Image 1 (spheres, rainbow, N blue to C red):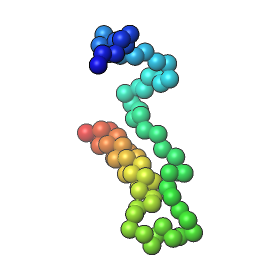
Image 2 (cartoon, helix red, strand yellow):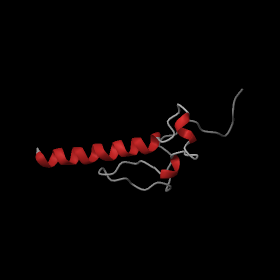
Image 3 (cartoon, one colour):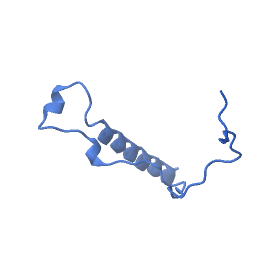
Image 4 (spheres, rainbow, N blue to C red):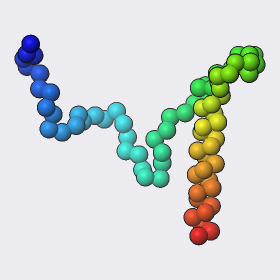
Length: 74
């Protein structure tokens, strides 16, 4: 079977204006506190970590702050 009229061999990536350039000092991370799932405390009864995204972003923020402090000291 042959598909006619479609070129699957692109010479360069698709150009888009959907994204802005991210400076090297920024991480392209999208986070919202709404990602943490809560329901009247019932999430604490389930082994699934409903607040894991909040923990991840707090860890990343702490790591960046710690790294910046080390850069100024060293």
